[in-house]
Length: 182
Image 1 (cartoon, rainbow, N blue to C red):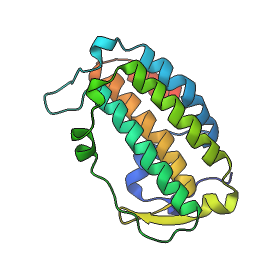
Image 2: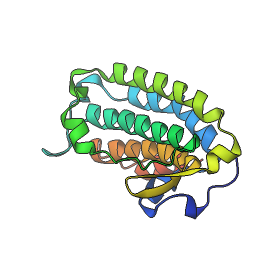
Image 3: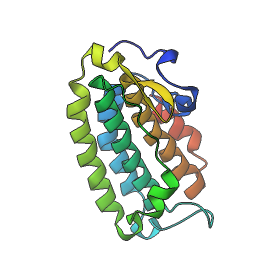
C-alpha cells in the first residue's frame, strides 16, 4: 500500500490518523487482539461508569467505536466502488441516545467488535491500490478509501486513550500512547 498523503483526508481526521504508526493493515489486524484484551482489564461493574454526568458510559464509548467503524467501512465500500454520490454525516450523540449499549455487557461488546473487525478485514484486504486511492464525499469532506482505514484504526486508538485517561485517571496514558505507536 502506498503511503497516505495529506491531500487524501480532511484535517479533522488528523487526530485519529496521527495515532496510526506503521502499516495500517497490520494495526487493524493487531487491534483484533489488543482491543478485546484491553476491554478484559475493565471490570464489568465499571461498564456503566461516566467520568462526568453528561458524558458517555464506557459501554457507550465502545458502542460508539462500533457505530463509527460500521459507518467508515460503509463509506470505504461506497468510495472503492467509485460511487460519486455524496454521503451524509451522522450525529454520534443521536446514535448513542438511541442505542441500547448500556443494556449490554462489556464481554458482548468486545465479542461484537472482534466479529465486526474480522468481517471488515475481508473487505479491506481485497482493496487494490486503485480502489484505495479513490475518494468520495461524506459529511462535506473529501476522503480516500485508504484514509478511512487509518481513521478506523486511529479512532479506536483515540477512544482507548480517552477510556484510560478520563475513565481511569491513569498516569500511564503516555505509556499507552507510546505502546500504540510501536
